[in-house]
Image (cartoon, rainbow, N blue to C red; front, side, top):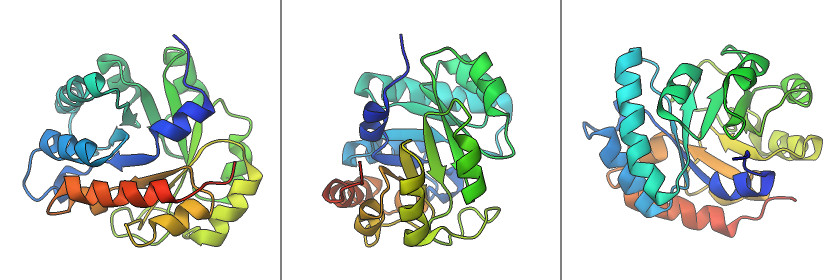
Length: 220
């Protein structure tokens, strides 16, 4: 089994749900994820910083069981051990997480790796790393994650698109009203948290975002 190509990742990460149980309005995360996938979410990243290892693995396994029959990739944030335990499809790393070189050595060859980048220097540094996509964070200011750098904005996204051939996933302050502009600025995929997790209807929110993301055209 080999890692997905860049073209395959662009397709599968087109609408990328990043989870946050605290925003789910008291609903179970599997319920929200299943509704979001029904609305058009094409990949799910499990990001749950407050869970202990056992609870994280149990939740990851439950999501893997839901998503695998639907051919929706499950990505684990940060925790390479959890990804290995549940045979996740991908791992997403931040700048302060496990180094990419170590994660790549530990993971099976078919598991893809995404890396968050918050500056031009980090984008340049990523060129020497064995990563499969970059997550630009944040595009716009957001209350969901406060430990990030200066927002990239649409102009920063456009400049980064010229700097790398890797798939670009945009995250931070993205919703249905700016999704088209983000895609047109060069994002291959839209990563969202509160726009789906905190929606009254995750399915309808995902459907609207999916429609917007399909209308946009990323630069090749």
